[in-house]
Image 1 (tube, rainbow, N blue to C red):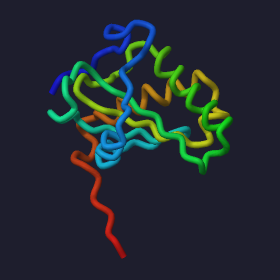
Image 2 (cartoon, rainbow, N blue to C red):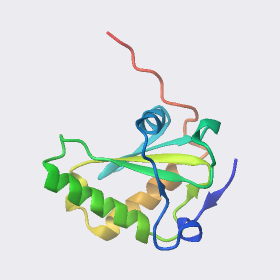
Image 3 (cartoon, one colour):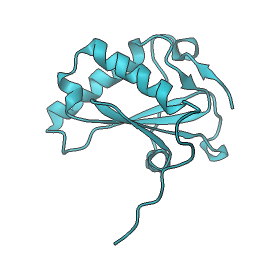
Image 4 (cartoon, rainbow, N blue to C red):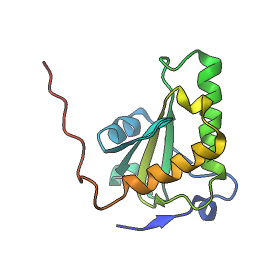
Length: 140
């Protein structure tokens, strides 16, 4: 496994690459998960099907439960900017990350949002955490 890499080295001023395909978001939902006050973070190693693993990829999800289009876009912009500006995020080279936003992301101070992001990324790769993918949900 490769170690963390700063996104500033890979793409100065732009942050990490984006996840765009639904299949990648679904795959990440089956991976490791860490909850924070303003969002939930999901991570999964990139497979060979992802093409070139030229670095970490990040996707953002803001559901309609959070609010209308204006609120969702505002939250998305805040999270994207927090990703871009937070120096030395512990993103692993061959992982995909999905941030599932909560409404609290709007009211949280920007500095706290950046700290939560860095803390969650560190926590999701902690070897002492329960390892392996999340258990499948039972259909009842």
